[in-house]
Image (cartoon, rainbow, N blue to C red):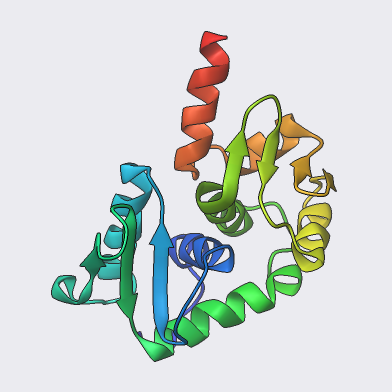
Length: 165
């Protein structure tokens, strides 16, 4: 990946990576049971990050895992995640995609909406965007959903479920 401007898709992948566990420094990986998230991850990896399709490993380890190795891309995405509170200060398509990536990989919905393992830097960034948290729980759901609407696969699923209730 050549040095490039931030794009919405790169922000989404950085959001996914910020909440994904990693075993190796150069590994970019997700593990999810939602096929639409895996498909979007692969599309962005190939289209925006320039990863060759044959370099993407699908389903090795667990059925929902997708990963590839690229040290330069990994470093850039981790830099975005480390500086999230400074980069994502305004409610726009970039911050919406980043938070959508976080929610798609670590989000949970039952009676409330949560993002698992919210760190202090995540809480600060979310607060700067007008999203209030208490631990992992999102306190102002409508504001949160309006930020990630149209960017998050999981938010679409939640919206459909809430509509049926």
